[in-house]
Length: 154
Image (cartoon, rainbow, N blue to C red; front, side, top):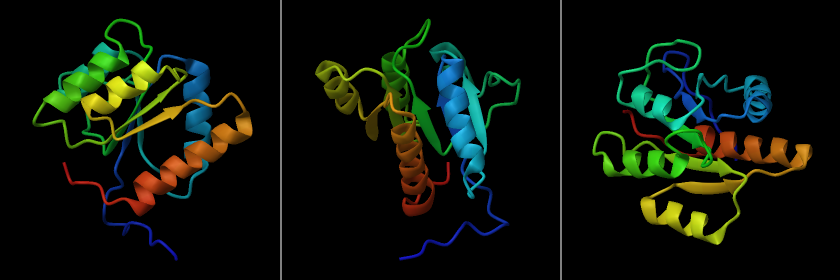
């Protein structure tokens, strides 16, 4: 089965990465920039910055104006407002709840996993330690969310 790319006239959905670790973000960014899909990436380094961007009152880490993402990749362990609270706020907001959220975290704590699904997370991925597995997981994530899945126009 082959998947067609979005038409050039259609803007690709963007990806908001909420990640405080520069090392983890750079690994993600490297994989994503090599993807043939060329997904626009925004980054926030903490929960407060992510919420400000989502509520169109802030800018991302690079100072770019807020753009509603097609998918949010969310770390749980963030400074300030943590990812658990960001997830709760997104999924309780009628304007934001349709944005798919994938938790991407080091926590494999069953309580975190259950709490995130109770709050409405779309997927929960434990960050692999192995570089090859990380690359595979990111490619699978990109393929699924940006090629297989039809995302809403927000």
